[in-house]
Image: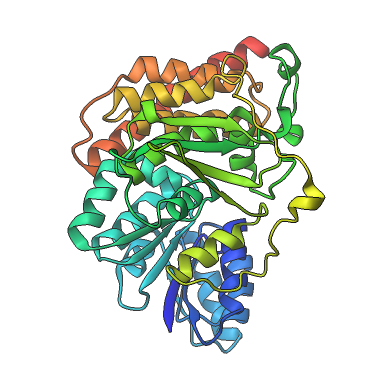
Length: 393
């Protein structure tokens, strides 16, 4: 019986993970559930899944969580705070950790799981973007197995049969992108788009932040950085192709001219089932794609001039050091400001570029250094937003 900590349980990935876990009650058990602030949703999940531990990242929600669990007659222990999240991820009550907390908030618990040799199912790409070197080094030193569960990297993982990329035989990694809701729009057409339009993804049901990242192609840029660290592949051998149908989730091109692709419906339960059971296969609740009904699969290069965030990510990867942390922090500030209506869609890459230029890059020699870079970038990005907000007023 695998005991699983689902960190980010109240989000869309958490919901998919719990669905797969519930399909195999004799094989998997959700022993730890963690959430950021949605305490009522966390309580509801505890009533269904009855974990040993429930943890809410916001300390102010602890009493609500504790009292509700007691009132429901559950033996689930209540915890609160980032330190508790990290301690439970590293603790003895789980052997598998699904790291699905969005943003930099998920980094500490992901590293804690890696440093205790856990089976780590990684959906928190920010942990890799911010601290890829530290994370992968910790995994190697402590024997943690990382299986990415975002669809693109899980596809590459499957095509490589769970191994690191052998640079003598692997020519290229090809990440596919849906193109988001604004595929084939011109830059002029993007000047007045709304947050609601940006969050209306044509294929995937996702949270608002990651939906905007998909619309700007920053999500794909972050995945390029992630692929570099996860598979040891240099940036020059990581490409992006737009594939609107979201059936081919990514590909690996080999030196002999072969290209392997992994296909499936756009449903995270497929990758979660892969990660939970690897190297075996279990039912995910997802039917395979009906290629005869789908008909055509199309591919095209991304419009990097219109969607500038992709090149900003490549720039940050080339700069190395703390540039990844700066990129991620600036993007989080810019996207939040766009969702709040403070800046326009095209302001997002401008805020990120200004922050990267202002902050530069320093050696990423410790988690403290990376967190300091994150904080500095947020200050610069906030200043960029305020100046742009004033210009739009």
